[in-house]
Each structure stands twice: as C-alpha cells, then as structure tokens.
Amino acid sequence: MILQRVGIPIYLQIKTYILDKIKSGEYVSGAKIPTERELSLELGVSRNTVSAAYKELLLEGVLEAQQGRGTFVKTVTDDVEAKVVGGRRERLVKIIDDAMAKVVELGFTVDQFAAIASIRAIEKNQAVKELRVAVVDCASEYIQRFINQIGQIANVRFETVILAELIEGRTPIELLQACDLVVTTLGHQAAVVGLLGKASKVIGVATVPNLDAVIKLARLPANTQVAIVAKSDAFVSNLQNLLEKTSINHLDFTVVQSSDFSEVNRIIANYKVIIVSEEREILVRQMVSESQEVITFYYEIDRGSLNQVLMKLVSQAL
Image (cartoon, rainbow, N blue to C red; front, top):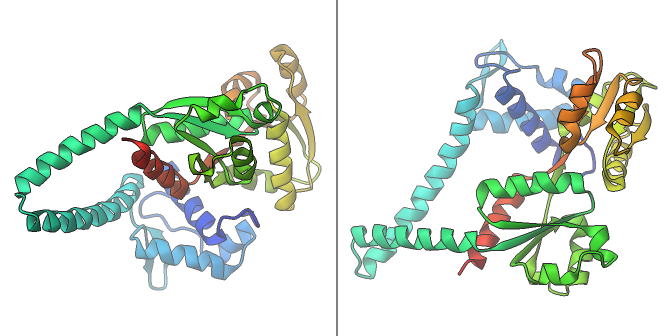
C-alpha cells in the first residue's frame, strides 16, 4: 500500500519505491519488473499513477521498455545515481558557463574567474562550518536522522531540541535565538515561529515516512499482534496517526516504552512482529529470534527540502 493523503504525490512515492528496489538489488540490472497492472494491484493505487512513475523513469534512462516483453531495469544501482548526478552536473555546467560569459564581459580572464570562484567556495564552506543549527521535532527518535541527513550536505554544529520541552520551558527559547538556523517539520513550523517570534530564522521541511515499513505492515494478516518498541510518546502517536490515514487498521498493537531492556526482551518475545525506532534497532535485533520480524520505522527529510536547507545555510554564511 502506497501512502495516501500524506502530502507527497503518489507517483513520486512509487518512483522512489522502484529506485529503492533497484539500489537494494531486488531489481537487478536487466531484470524485468512488474507490469503497471501488477504493481498497481500490489501497492493499492491506480494504474495511471503507476504509469506516470514508469514514464519518468523511462525518460531518465533508469528503465527501458521492450516491445512485447515488458519493462526492464536498464541500469545497476551505481548507474541510477550516475543518471541523477549526470543531469545535475549538466545544469551546473550551464550555470558556470553563463557566469563565465558574464565575468569575461566584466574584463576578467577565465583563469581569474576560476581562482576567485575557488577562493569564494572555500570561504563559504568555512563560514558554513561556523553556523549553529537547531533541529526541532516532537519525537526524539526522528531528530537524529534529520541531523544525519543535514550533516551529509553541510558540516555545521547541531542543537537537538524536543518541541514539548521547548513549549514547557525546559529548553530555553534563548537556545533557538542563539542559533543561526532552526530546522523543523512543516507541521511544527507555526508553533516554533510562534515561540521564537522570528520566522526568517525558521525553515520548515517536508518529511517522508519509511514507505517500505508501511507496506510491510499493510501486508500483515488481520489481527497480527505487533509490538511497538519506542522511547517517546510522540513516536507512537505519529506512527498510529499515519496508519490511521493509510487505513491500516487490521493489526493489534502493544506499545513497549520501558527503559529496562530485560523487560523489553521479555515482552517482545511474545510477538512475531516488532516495530522499532532506528536508535533501538540494533538492540532489538539482538533480542529477537529468526522467526520474528523487525520493522524499522522512521521519518526523513525529503530531497527537495534538504536542498532548501543547504541553500539557506549557504545564504546565511558570511
């Protein structure tokens, strides 16, 4: 089942789903993938929506259609990344060429342009490192993933802030005021701006749930008993709200939030399926048997929002 009504176009979710299958090796290079009809039935979406995702991947050269045979993976995982990077590189080269032409008009040589651009890039990179970024969310389980994602594109200093603690005054608002940028989800943006009183410093990001986890839950038999191992109430609440929106209401859930790991081990031993946050995944996997299934659930910042965060950081850097 693909996620309905969560703000991300369904065809883009399907596209990401297929790319993930290719990158993980489930759809290998040269392999035939499910037909549009088969995938629409598997994911519970319309065939036209699946067709839109296939068409984009065909145009990008990730898939290829063979007359009378079906649709096949055209490239391996590395090539999928290369296609994406290649397209971005072409756009970057055009921007550089346009800038170079304007610089030459100003009387600079190409060598001077290259030298000045290199120095400026180093200056900007160093300035970004000096920035302090607060990451705010209601669930502590999601914050570390957000930090890891931002950390991959920008080397900045991070502050971890739980929204409830900020509202209750346990985390002083001065902490946010001292930061150069505050990153939070779109759902919490208004609350954070209201507390901070300065909208220009806050950037709201779109987040996407772990689609693979939701599909696995949707495919479980009715009345399957599932244990949710979590640290915060917000993690459990967000997961339950998502399952309600996607009409996954055929399972019986038990929440396990104990900090006593021996107690957690004792409780989850009675469940065939365990949902766990990333920070407790390794621990739980050490506890379970081979017959038990562990499903890791998380939200992550989507690619477009990550790019917006990077743009904001670069513009903030002096």
